Image (tube, rainbow, N blue to C red; front, side):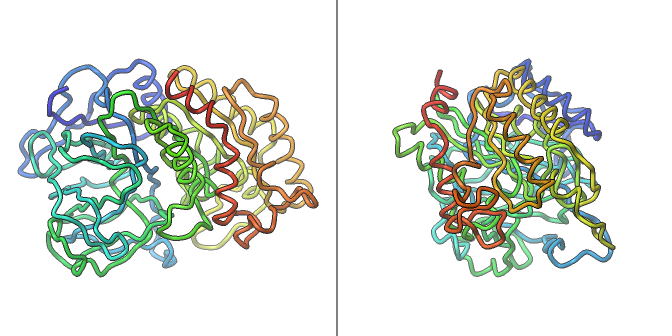
Amino acid sequence: MNGMSAITARSTTALGRAMLGIACAALGIACAASRAATGVDGSAGPQPSDVSRPDAGWTSAWATALQPMPERPDLPALYRAPDVAGRTVRQIVHPSLDGRSARLYFSNRYGRTPLELGEVRIARAVDAAQGSAGVGTAVMFGGRASVLLPPGAEIASDPVPIAIARGAPYAVSIYLPAQRMSAWHRVASQVNRVSSPGNHTADTSGAAFAGRFTQSAWLTTLAVDEPGSGTVAAIGDSITDGMGSSLNRNQRWPDALARRLAQSGAAQTGVINLGISGNRLLSDSPCYGEALDKRFAHDVLARPGVKSAIVLIGINDINFQAMPPRPGLDCDYPHTAVTPDQLVAGLRQLVASAHRAGIRIHLATITPAALPPPREAQRQAVNQWIRSGGGADGVIDFDAALRDPDAPTRLLPRYDSGDHIHPGDAGYAAMAAAVPLDSLRSDTHP
């Protein structure tokens, strides 16, 4: 591995992205860019340095899944992006693995215009809540401080000489000379910062970072160079994303699972969270991202160092089919009718895709949501199939962990965040406690 960055550009069609992601992961080769990155001066930018997998030897320690932002003139405030053009965005990440050095991965996968990263720095956060950090280390791309990514492209930085400590907060500061958000991760459960105009990547104080937002953008992965490490990818909907958990406290079930693994002595097993709130298994959404069966290849199989996946999905497929159409932005569109057999077929496809890529996969039962009887029957039918094994490498019974024994269609009250669908912090801790650690350890270190 030399110091050159690796860049990939994927087909603009969902099928093309999925097929290319499967091929790259299964064959262990670099996906060559069809549209090259350039320097901001228009000169040739960083290119793949060889035909080996660009992330060979690197393991994801933190990651997120991006989703396209809805575009309408009448967007509600919830879906309006902060003004970032000519400013610096400072995002806080908590890696789940130690590392001797790091690589940062950036994406313009859903972009409609080129993405210019003017300067990027990473530093240990001093006060994550206030946005203060050390001066940190410059992040380079093929030896350059800036890079221009065309629409559809993604890039991995050069190795960054910074020691990474598991669980510690790191501030990634990105100066964007002329950029607007077109994709984000909408529910980050973390307050991130936007500066006043200018390049504030090296600021140690948080004084310039008065803007606050609870999304994240562009940065998709922090990987570490740590021999013998492996990562578990948790993927799903809002219950994996952590809706209902405490802001800035890392209380989602994948966070709690990472802590359990570390406390058990499995220090070389990381956990990354690829949940998207509102996500469905079989249908795209204008607000909630591509269907999980489409994004699985890119978000899990092609992620560096992933050895195992935990999949929790289906409640929104069951629910959104019954939601009435809304005028204006209808995030539940399309209101696709589904059957348990269709959901089972989608899960079978995920199992087959993971196994083709050499990744073990665990299916999780759909958690209680106080559904009306017809939809509850669908949930129970899918859960019955999941409990049968379904060809997966393991089953995690989150339904059993969270349900009220006296009313099993509902969450146990002490686990309920209050909306009867999403757990609170105690519920997410109970989910993490329900995951069998020995199985994950054998997945990542066979």
